[in-house]
Each structure stands twice: as structure tokens, then as C-alpha cells.
Length: 355
Ligand SMILES: NC(=O)c1ccc[n+]([C@@H]2O[C@H](COP(=O)([O-])OP(=O)(O)OC[C@H]3O[C@@H](n4cnc5c(N)ncnc54)[C@H](O)[C@@H]3O)[C@@H](O)[C@H]2O)c1
Image 1 (cartoon, protein in one colour):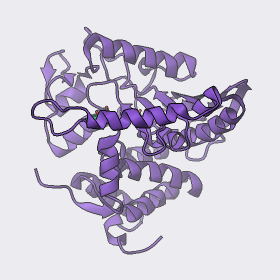
Image 2 (cartoon, helix red, strand yellow):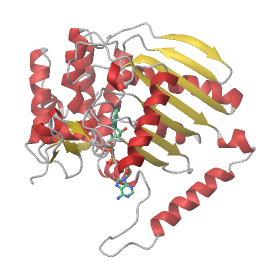
Image 3 (cartoon, helix red, strand yellow):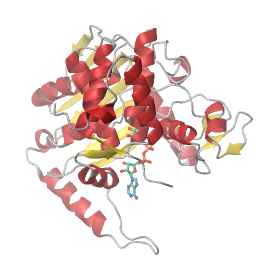
């Protein structure tokens, strides 16, 4: 396979924010969404990078995402708060949830912030790592549209229900950031766009037969990771981000990929703990740092060069791509078509223009 082309992260961020502003997203919110998408590409999570922008724009233009909603705190009680995102961008809602969680944690050492009426927030680690870099443990979950069959089934009843947990270490957090489907939906969309097969065990076709064809997988259903255990985890996450947070469950959601004009009503649940507030000292953070080192020093299995801590793959990508970011060629072509349609310059032509 040939390496994807690279583009300046600054140019990509500016172009992404300009596109969002051109369809009515306020500048500050456009910057929040753009930063999250480009950071996903920088970390190699292309399924949640600028690949999503054309769909976001379609959703804004057809009413599926409100570009400038009045998000409202509908309830604040003890260490909890509920935000109604009023159909806005998931990224903008989660950025507000982070601010609220910091405020609550300062008083209570923990916070549970629920978001309802939201949309897609992109890659989870982008949000929880911000809290972990400030010494807070953070867990974030979300509902999505239905694309996954429960264990033993052949019917889309669950979302790809992401689970993200970041734990502070004083350096880069230990972060698990994953879809509970065997493969992230966006990765299958990327494979379909690039004409690539998907790994075995990721999906069944519309007749319930296992497939490695990305298009057949999109028409059929994704499989949960880890058999009955992964399926059970996805079901519980569906309950945390659905009924508990107040979001639509997958089966009640029309996914943006299926029809961008429909409000998804996505729910997110953010749970934050301050280990220093809990114990009165930062021993937990020091122990996590020691464990992260120990993990990386663990004896590797035959044929494996090293053991990694969760989050290392993405962090290494980010460190290697401070400014030039590889983005799949088909994604850059789509972005160029999008900017052209809005009368904006091609992001590739802006490489040397400073912000
Ligand atoms: N917003 C949404 O609705 C939504 C839905 C689904 C997924 N997502 C996002 O999709 C992204 C991709 O999810 P995914 O399931 O494809 O992730 P993945 O399978 O690439 O990685 C999952 C986790 O495994 C870790 N990992 C990878 N290789 C490793 C190794 N060799 N050793 C140790 N750890 C390793 C990664 O650091 C990561 O924490 C995530 O950012 C997730 O938040 C978002």
C-alpha cells in the first residue's frame, strides 16, 4: 500500500474551521470541532478525523445538526449536571461538559455530567486526555446510531458505543479509547472509500454471513468485540449513555451516515474523579505512572517487539506528526470538493499561509 499524502495540521485546521463557519457555525465552536478532527488525524485515528467533515456539513445543511444552538443546563444537583445540547455538535457539547465537570470536581472531588440531545463527538480520547493531563481520572461514553448486532444476533440493535477511560500519570495518560464493535464504523467507511477489505470477524452481511467486504458490512451489521463479553459491555454502555444520560438509544437513533437530516439525539455520560480529592494526596497518580512504565517493560511474546501501554500507539503518531499529518488521499479529495462547493480555497493550497 502507498503512504497517504501529508498536509499541514495548521492548514487543515484552518480549512476545517472555515468550512464550518461557512455553514453557520460560530467561530469559537468551529475551532473546537476543527481542533478535535485534526487532532484525531494527527493521532492516526483517521476514522474520526476530517473524514467526517463532509457528513457534518451535510447534517448542518439539512437540519440534522444545529449549527448555533442555545445549549442549556437543564439540571444541576450535587455533583451532577445535565446539558441539553439542543441538536448541536457533540464536540461543542462535550467541551462544555468538560468545563462543568472541572467546576463540580473542584467542590466535590467527583462529577457526573450527562449530555442529551447531542450528536457525534469524534474521538473520545481527545476529551478525556484533557482532564487526565490535569490530574483527573475521566470516563466518557456515548450512544451512536444502530450498526452492531448483539452477541448471537443478526440485527442492528446496538451502537458502536465508544468507551474511553483516561488515567493521569503526570506524563501522558494511560488511555483506553475504543469502539465496542470489533472495528470502528468510521474505519469500515474508510475501507469502503479506499476499496480495502476489512479484517475477518468485524462484520456480517445482510444475510448474517461473516464478510470482509466493507460495503457488505455496511449493508449488514458489525459484530461486537470480544464475543458475549464485549456484547454485554456494549449493552451496559448503551444504558449509561442512553437511559441514564437521557440520550436516544441506538435503535431509536437515525445515524448520520444513514440520513444526515435527522437529529440523532445522542447521549454522552462523563464521569470524572480527582484522585487527590479522594485520598488527600497524589499517590494514585504516581502508582499509575509506575504501572505504565512496568507495562512497557513487560516481557514481549514471541514475535512481538514490545508491550505497549494503551494510548501509546496514538501518542507516538502525534509526536511524529507535530505539523505534517498524513490523511488518506480520498479524504483530501472530498475536502477539496467541499471547500470548492463553498467558494473556499483548497486546504492543500494554504499550506504555507500562517494563521
Ligand atoms: N463518537 C462516537 O460515536 C464513536 C463511536 C465509536 C468509536 N469512536 C472512536 O473511534 C476511535 C477508534 O476506536 P477503535 O476501537 O477502532 O480503536 P483501536 O482498536 O485502534 O484502539 C483501541 C485501544 O487499544 C489501544 N491499542 C491499540 N494497539 C495497542 C497495542 N498494540 N497495545 C496496547 N494497546 C493498544 C489503543 O491505544 C486504544 O486505546 C476511538 O477514538 C473512539 O473514541 C467514537
